[in-house]
Amino acid sequence: MTHIETPDTIISANYAAMSKKAAHEIAALLHSKPDAVIGLATGSTPIGMYAELVRMHEEEGLDFSQATFFNLDEYVGIPHDHPQSYHHFMHEHLFSNVNANPERIHIPNGNAVDLEAECARYEQGIKDAGGIDLQVLGIGANGHIGFCEPGTDFTLGTHITQLTEQTRNDNARFFDDDHEQVPTEALSMGPATIMSAKRIIVLANNTAKTNKTHAVHDALYGDVTQDIPATILQKHPDVSFYLDWSIQREVQKMIASQSERSFSRD
Image (cartoon, rainbow, N blue to C red; front, side, top):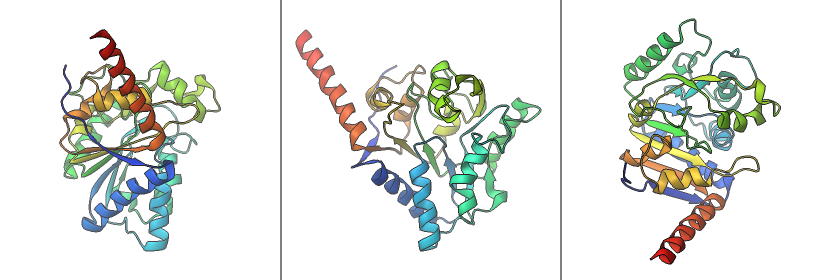
């Protein structure tokens, strides 16, 4: 498949500045539409954004009470109170620290007796809420968004996914660096669910343990392919990548290197 259009990029000097910019976009939406429907992500990248949202709630009175929240994903088979469950993560970093209405907080139930039915229920819940106004995403080193792993059918809605070895290895850092503790399955919004959001923002920075330069480069400039799920975002009419300067610099180096190789072949 061919390249469509390069998404917008918003570059910040560092991770903290990137996190604040993303948080301020969410705050602006809540100010303009208090009952907005917002899709949220987990992982280390959005923690700074959540901290800034909590600060704005505590110091500036940012109101979450009328908004509805849908989380991207959840592991299958670990209790909600497990330190690495996404139920626990979201309450620790955001929901327990702001005035979000518990009845408007939605996270997939990875312990449901019927996981297929849970996926269908979750997908219908998003539709019943009127669709997602703003979806927050991270991006995996292998180009996954949510837990939509390489090879995921772009037409899928919320579904059960088998986690790749790379994803489990990347996430082992959250499980005492023990790969065996990382669940093998998760429930995740699908590409079709994500793409139905009115606006999408993607947060990305490199860390000592996870380098996302190639994934970000391909998501922005590569061909649209199910092998790199994030490339589907090129087809969305309103998407922005929030990047810190360090990852932007590495992406630019990749582009320059590719141009040099192309020039030398010519």
